[in-house]
Length: 305
Image (tube, rainbow, N blue to C red; front, side, top):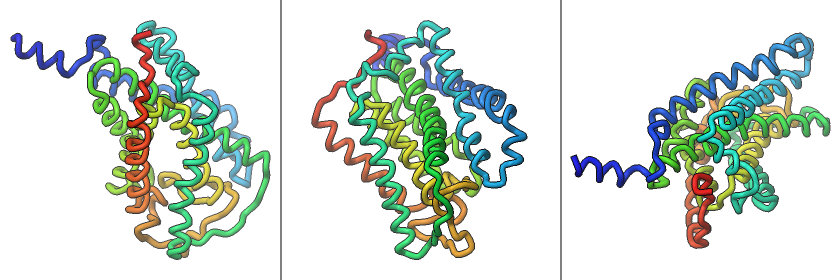
């Protein structure tokens, strides 16, 4: 019996509560996601249904498809506020973590645009895809970036905010929180059109990359803007599928008939279902570890405040 207790203490943190267990935390995260999306439908999609149907440009359709993730934001924040033992998570979302600053926020945008552009340019140079100019409207592009940020940051809030912090509270080794939240992140995309085993692997590694940013750089802000910039760049600027989903409105349009599968592009899923995307995310993950692990930045622990 004592041996079982010692093993339990080796795995679990002193602050562990049964509600912080991996299974409970994952199930709770899934419930919050589903209910949050339902709330988003009530707040965003249903009220603007007629306007979306009457918009021939497709702009309003993609706008509300991204904006409806506001429901996840509202529900997770409300849950953390109402359930007092989860309130410390809220402090990890604001400026108490040393990496939640303007510098890392902007770095996230640069990294998101840069990494996605590497993949897109490679596909273009390899002649896997062709794109052509569609239209430019600054206000629409700005509003779409904000909408994409709502969607991307909502997924970060769920995975690298709520679930990650719950698991960091419950388990001694950060690998538990890093691996399990990346697993949930990959699972979120299992039903996306054109998904493949390679695509899920890429999204899982991307989740690891974002988690390392939160752990070693102490910045969920950087993860949020990086995620948003990646999605915006491929979906709204280049007009490529975002995890298999094509935007009806974008700066450039994809010549879908001429697209072909290769190491750099997946006809069914886009840039993310490729060996190149996996390699880019692996390199980024290793780079974050090599650069920031040496700086010995102690990640903010909301449970000790």
